[in-house]
Amino acid sequence: MKKLIISLLALLSVGGPAFAQVQTVQPKIMVIPYVKQGEDLRTILEEDVNKRIAITKIKEAFDSRGFTTVDFVAKLKAANANATFASDTKTDLKTMIVQSSGADIYVEAEVDVLLSSNGNSVKMITTAYECSTGNSLANKVGESGKFYTDDIGKLASKAIESIAEDFLNVMQVKFTDMVENGKSVIINFAFDENSDYQMSSEVGNQGLLLSDEIELWMESHAYKNNYHIQGTTDNQMIFDDVRIPLKDPANGNNYNSNKFALEIFKFMKSLGLTISRDIKGNTIFITIK
Image (cartoon, rainbow, N blue to C red; front, side):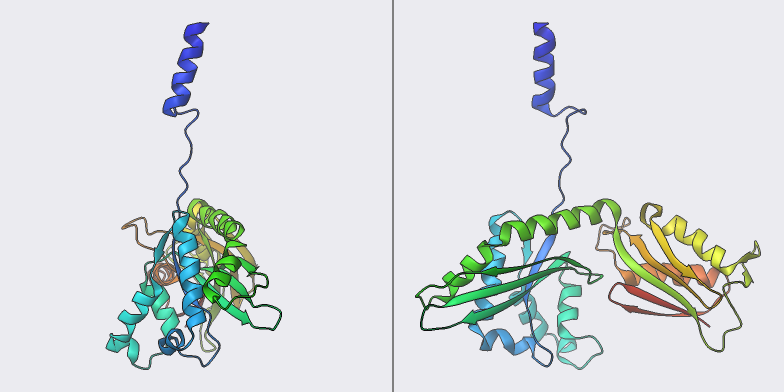
């Protein structure tokens, strides 16, 4: 009996197969300031010291808990030095920085400094988004409480520390779920007004209905075969929850809606169909011509 007890203790101490813990994959995070419509990211941090403080304090809170963070200020400076970012394009600066950052999650921070005769306070509104889809993962509002101090940095620290643990826990749970089950995108298949096709059209070598071909393809290409059809008519087919991988299995880079839309393009081309595609956040619009 003594030998059996020693053997069990040894198995526990080395983390044998029956007792091995699953290692949690942590996201890479970038903290960015909340900006109102019409405000310019290029100047907002230079003109508003409170936003700079807020970003720094939130980043410090993440760093102190072992998360890997991306320096938004450094990315912004690099963007300012890049002529491509400086030119007018269809994509806004924030989206460009988020997409090129290498981060898995970006946290948008809005800081509200309240000054009064009976004490100053800071309110911090933080929202975490998955970078490639824009899906919201967590949001919390932290408040510092009122203090007779002009040190906005200390008040910002109190505000973020009041919510940091809960905020990170919720975000980590959502991120871990994405690692295990993929992230959700919406896919809308529709037809150009001049198209000769409908969902009931027979296509491909097997002569299946187009709607059946699409579902069979989705079944084999959705992450872990996880997808849901909202509805199908002759003119439209909507998948309201298709899971795609968080990381590209080929190279380990971040996987996004654009890459999945490219796979759909290749599939539709193999059926002899011409399509156009439009990606907005976590929604992919496919128009069959």
